Amino acid sequence: MVAFRKEDYPGYNQKRGDGDREENRRRNMWSGVRWLKHYSSVQSILVVGDGDFSFSLALATAFGSGENIVATSLDSYEALVGKYNEAESNVMELKRMRATVLHGVDAKKMKTRPYLKTRRFDRIVFNFPHAGFKAKEYKEVDMVNLHKDLVKGFLGNARHLVQPYGEIHISHKMGHPYDAWDLKGPWSLPLL
Picture 1: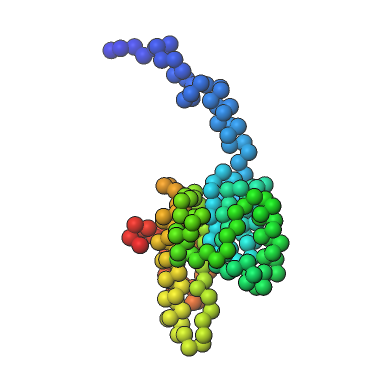
Picture 2: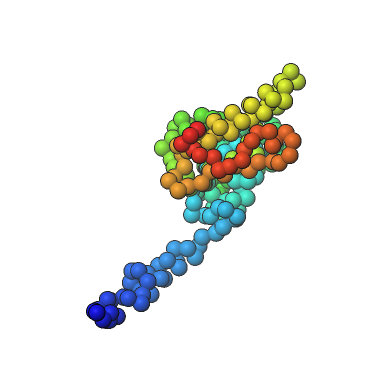
């Protein structure tokens, strides 16, 4: 039997790296990280279809910066400020906080957008996806299919923009008619 001697293995009782120096480096690296629920200030985050941009602004405010946030809306800037009272001030504040703000981004085609197609994100977020309201002649089943197509198109695009080991988050209402969208997960992205 060979005796195990600590002195034969420098750093045996230390963490990987150079002991205290490595521990201090790790502590400093994470000391400035801010979290808001599932999101941190060091993650690159794509927010899709953010309506009045209040969610993106909440993230940027919690982080103290928007530099890692790309916030998008389907609407043009003009349509956005016509729809939402707070949109203009939210967009201005996001830009002041160095977030990237993009308008006219279709969740089903976003992987082709020049700014997005070369980027990869740690988190991609689509809160309450909605295909919009259609004319009265649309049956409920048609509306459900429009919403399901939106989610499927979003996921098919998001998988090209997410980092390996990144996450795609969808917030979704419960109850009728939303349960008919059948968004139970987890979704297997390669199958889309």
